[in-house]
Length: 433
Ligand code: NIG
Ligand code: FE
Image (tube, rainbow, N blue to C red; front, side):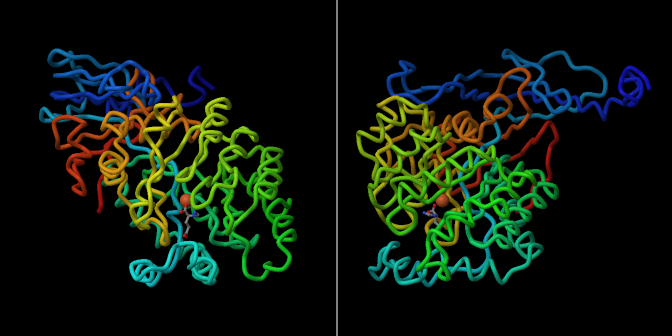
């Protein structure tokens, strides 16, 4: 074996295979860096540094160098990409989704318009349980086929990493089927997928009178143990809510998950305030998501424990309910990420850039805060901040070339896809939308 582990002399690798790309003529290179904090003292560009008239060099799957003031020296074999004087941002990261699902719930959408609430629909046996029925009836390959075009559209919208939760199976076989579909999808297309086990999404109908038995199943070696052993998920999420799991039940599930090496996340403080964000702090969750009804005690506890606040403004917008108090959370100094919560019930919202627009107009988050929230802070919420989510030497080359001049114009162009090209792991990816 040679010094290169049997791969041959690296100097013999042809230039193409080395993947040398230079992006030139970048009007604004946006480098989100810091965590969003209202008192960060960085003015309106809180957390985002910019270079104008910039270039960036990719070698292999990494960012090798970048700079401003015209073009860098290029070498033979470099692929040159002209950004046309437009803005380049890191690949966007959607850190909370339910992208694997079957069926459609537009009937509930109409019922809400007519006056029923999301919680009422759930209490009447609809909601999550409707999607559970459809997912149980679908095969793993059918789930894959349904999710693939969704991921293609997300990629075309500049999203290069997506977290996907189980939670519509609610049996060992069906939860594992969902997460195996995620694993398969990860191998089939360019978007990097991150699995989260959400066996505790709601108590399935057949366990209504014996909820403890369902929690036993969720925590069992057959289910949670198998998820961990097969590497199907990195995180374990619980919907801690009056219509789903109590704080005590959630604690039990999340502590068990930690034993299996899964990192806790919570759907917290969405509809009612039952202490879920405090539990997130107590169990050392990486993030607490939703937070529409968070109180001061929850904010303090999360800050103390370093829990990331993942806000889901597309969900409140889609349900027509009040948004999470983003300004209060940011001004308290918590790191904030934004995600779509893409799911067929509460957030049929695929577009992370539309979510940024909603966060700007409905939550008074600045475009800079939003950009940090869908890159650096979203990467942190997925335990990937050392590899993705910003522009820095040595970071993975996940980049989006926009057709707008600066990142403020990204949420400003609400509902329009401003993405021109996407680079994932150093490779320009074909876009199918
Ligand atoms: O994040 N709140 C709980 N879970 C999802 C909704 C799931 C559904 O309604 O299908 C959410 O909003
Ligand atoms: Fe969710």
